[in-house]
Length: 406
Image 1 (cartoon, rainbow, N blue to C red):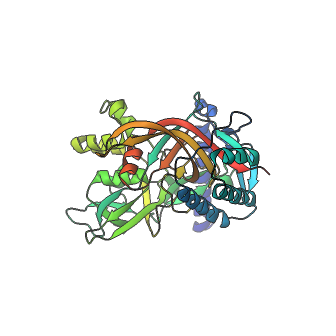
Image 2 (cartoon, rainbow, N blue to C red):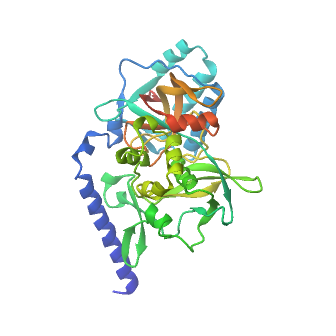
Image 3 (cartoon, rainbow, N blue to C red):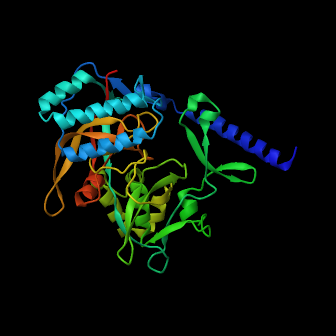
C-alpha cells in the first residue's frame, strides 16, 4: 500500500474513533435525554390556549425581517425539508406560508382581526422550554464597536483571526444517519485528527502566530473576548473608517460561560452579573483575566462583511426582530412569536424597570451558548439601548413558531 493510501486509511480510522467517542459521550449523560434533542421534541403543537399575538414594534422592521427570510428561502431547493416539531414542510410550503403572513400584516392592522386570521390559517407550535420548567430563557446580543487597526503596534496588539487553513469539519452523518446535521471540527497533525486549538492555545501559547491570519488588532484583550461573545461587530480604524466583521467559524470546542465561572468562584454575585458587570470586574482585576477568559475553550474566527451583521442563514440581522435559536432542533428562518420582559431605560442610560413585551421575530441566527429548546437570544442592534438590553437581559418567557396550515 502506498503512502497516500495509508494516510487516507489512517484518517478514516481516526474519524471512526472520534465517532465512537462521540457516541459514547452522548450515552454518559442521562440527564441530556430529558431535554429536547430532536426537532420533534422541541416544538409542541398548540391545540388550545393560543397566545395573544400583540406586537410592540413597528411594521417596517417586521416586513424587512420577513423579506430577509424569503430571500434565504429563495436560495434553497424548493423540496428541501424543514422540521417543525413532529411535522415536515417543504421549502416551497414555508415560502408560501411567509408570503401569506406578509400579506396579512400588510393588509390587516386591527390586532383582533389579525389574531383571528392567524389562528384560522396557521399551525402554532410552542417551544418545549427548559427541563422541568417549560419556559424559555431569553438573553440578548448586540453589535459592538471597538477601536482597531489593520497593523499592529504598541497600542493595537490583540488580533482577531480569519479561519485557519488547517481547520477541518467532519460531517458525522456520513457515518451514521442518526447524526444528521452533526459535525465535529478538528485539525490534521501527521496521521492524526485532533481537536482544534483551544482559546488558551491560541491566545496564550500563540498557536496561530506566523500564519498571516490576522484581520485586525484591537487595544484590549477584553475587546477581543467580547467580540467573540457577540459574534460580530464594527471596527473603527485610526483614520475614521469602519469595517464590519462577522462570525465565520469556531474551533469546535464547547462553549463555557465565563459569567457562571465567575459566580462559582465568588468573583461576583448574581445581582452584579451582567455583561457590563463582568467587563467592569475584569478591568479592575487584570490578574484574573486570563484565568477567567481561558475557562471558555471556544474560539471564534471572523470574516469581513459588507452588509452585516449576518446571521447563520446568511442574511443581515434586523434589530429587535432577529433571534438566535439552536439550529439543530428549530427550523431556520421560521416565523416566531415571543413574550418576555425588556428594560426601560432613563435619559442617563440606567435601567429604571422591566416591562412585559411581545412581538413577531425571525429565527435567523444561532450561537455557541444557545442550546436546547429553552434558550433564545434576541439581537438588539447597535445603539446604547441595544448594549444595555443585551448586557442585562436574562428573563424567562414564551416562544412560539408559526407556519401556514397545508
